[in-house]
Image (cartoon, rainbow, N blue to C red; front, side, top):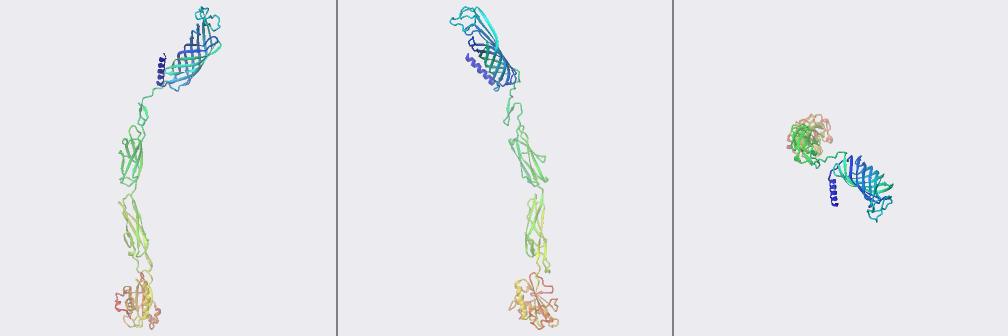
Length: 575
């Protein structure tokens, strides 16, 4: 019997744990076995009674309900006597249920009401039991054991009763639960004496009403993203990202822009691409090579729409590149120094920049006047007025040209070539002569060999001008030319006491009596000849001029010739 009970218990528990969860029923009806252990009273010993009972419960919610309890238990033999007792209870009260464990539901309750008790016993009988066991109660009409009962007496009454306890229900299905145990403290008040009793119940509970049970969960299927969804539902689409890289980001018309797409969250070979530039579709390749020929300058937006199939949401990305505008070569040119003297040179340099025209060639220079060799400007070729003794300046325009594959760029600057003021011609004292005489005396030689020589030594490239004059009353023909030739011979012969000034640097003129407005400059030689201080004596002379390098011959000197052309060297060094 015990083995069968254990098997049934295990089976019921297994069914409880494996069944699916149910909603709270609105009504419960219990039917089952009832056992009561009555405690002793004033005239009866403690005894057990068996019977059955039922309960009706109404649940307000999953935790709280109200219970109506009715049942009866019977014992036909109390203490070995023919003593029948029946107790029927009718109780009601609250019940608190714990439904947190699915099929297993403990509950606790406290019920109040009454008990209807009936008692039957025999009187005036013949001994039928052992005479050694007298009845231990003092109720009139009862005899000792061993006597035969000749009559029955029945007593009944209704008294207060209550129970407090709990139990455990194991739900077997939607409408049936098994109660293996219900255990209560059972308080009765029979014969005006309170008895503390113990009640045990077991049976089946029938469940009705309430929410419909939750439908069984649908069959699930795995999705690519690792989640599970019902078998008849579509998997949620996954996201992936795409990013773009354009190289280069700035190009000239005609150059290519290479754009690549990088995806994350999906295999690249799953992705289909649709490329557009400024809204116009241009390609469906995995990469974009965009040619900018015949495109206007400006910023262009590249967009790719990426689709990876039904399992992924489509996505897109954008980037930009710029087509630059063509700029012809433009630049600057400089001259260093920008102001230079005649005969000096200036270094030329330039810088040209352009855009989208290819490599710019080295600059080529030209000048409005003067000469250019490579990157050097030379003032030597600049024309100045040779007769102007004052400083002269000329502004020269330098032009630099550089070209790209399309155009030639030009830049200009200016510089100044300066020819300084010519040094004034130096007038030395006149060399004086005696009347009708062409010989250079000692005083005249001092002027030529000392004073003039000092100027030549300081400026070796300077020139000497000798001008011969005569007075109107002199009678020797060609006297003015002879005087000039002898003076020229003294400074060019290079022998004896004579100087060696190159004949090419000596100019000779012989205007004769025409003085050309040149004043008399006798110096310390006025007394070296007779009548030298007179006006006539002042005309018997040779004017001596030193012309510094770069200076001009005085305008009073006319028809001069080089000493070399006049064959002055044939005269030797005059004595």
